[in-house]
Amino acid sequence: MAFPPAKSDENKIYLLLSSADAMKQANVETVGQITGWGSDVIVITTNQPYIILKKLYTRAGIDLSKVHFVDAITKYAIGKVPEEQENVIFVNNPENLTDMGIAITRTLKEGEGRDVFVLFDSVSTMLIYLSSANISRFLHFVSSRLKILDVSGVFLAVEKGLDPLLLTQLTTFVDEVVDMDRA
Image (tube, rainbow, N blue to C red; front, side, top):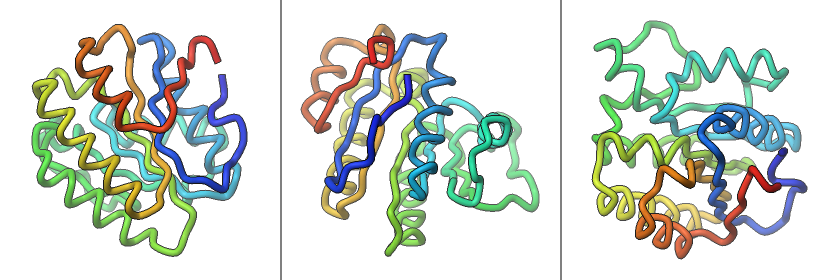
């Protein structure tokens, strides 16, 4: 189920649809594939705390020096920022789209001059905190920003967890939709 199957010279935005039980594996495989090309990955996580993802990536043999995080769940879950953390920016909570946008912009600036992918995990989890309309507006901002900066992006989502209007809107923002359960 590895995605993307090959590195492209063309920077694209992808929507990866997965079943709920395969979402974590889709994340790990996608990050492993991208870092395997020598590219950096900025993981924007609203789903799993970065420390959990870091452990999963380590177990999968992923080079963590290539992975940077914008974590919107840890501070919300434990009420404070863990001490002495590298390659991570913490956002107060998944509802704080302004801070998340600032953190994404900051992390992209730090990655200037390098081949960088942005992985957003996950669109489905954001529905717990925000309306479909707010998510759609924010992801339109993110995808537009990535296209302007010529950066590839991947939005992970559980297909059955999205309302049809949000799925339709996301489809218009991206260059390619991939059903990971059929890939």
